[in-house]
Length: 309
Ligand code: TRP
Image (tube, rainbow, N blue to C red; front, side, top):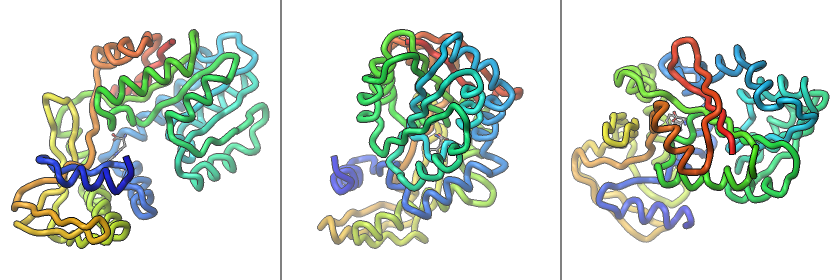
């Protein structure tokens, strides 16, 4: 579906929703980078801690005695965290890195960051995940796929299963998936991570409306919406919503339609699912993958799973 169709379909639904990729215009990208440095947003720091302190174990597991390795990273961006692992891997074998992202500017930064590394070749792929996975399927030799940052949690369980099935097909037998997933924990800690004191996550969430205003000639008034993060117990996920502060009408001129919102009605913009061993094992096995190792930070807030095809 096109972005136009996604917006029209989402805003016409009973529970209104918007596709999360619309967060990411230029300002959205900047705000997201800021989120990853917030005191309440422990995810990025915890995953980086795992990569930094356990890079040798991870590299050992991924290379065994292979002389070469091909690594594909989904949604790599500038590969700021994964470069820790890539450098450790490149010490052990000849490494080819395929960073995948739709944002070509971020991939440029990635290539620049990794340019001076001996025994590391970078082959950027500006495309969607699915397309990249089918290209990577034809690469021969030992392979690994990185899917980090708990991005898995932003997919529904069905979407997650189908992505992991494509990962499994792309890896062939014997390849490794390195999966970063945020862990279930006390709800207050989770809520604070998505509703920080400085209000950066609120600005990030609201920015989806100004992006839609610009892109589709809409007239969302941002002062009439409030950011809300809630815990959905049955989905075991944090949900981000935009709450209409009053009864209002919004016109989406380019799309040729208008919507009405009641006071208190919400637009669901993102879900961030949280995992325990059981949920991950189940998800992996439904895609033909087996959990091989689990690595955690000292506070056990986040986990990096190594799974095998
Ligand atoms: N995948 C990360 C998470 O679930 C990052 C992320 C995606 C995020 N969408 C977000 C963080 C929206 C804050 C708000 O946390």
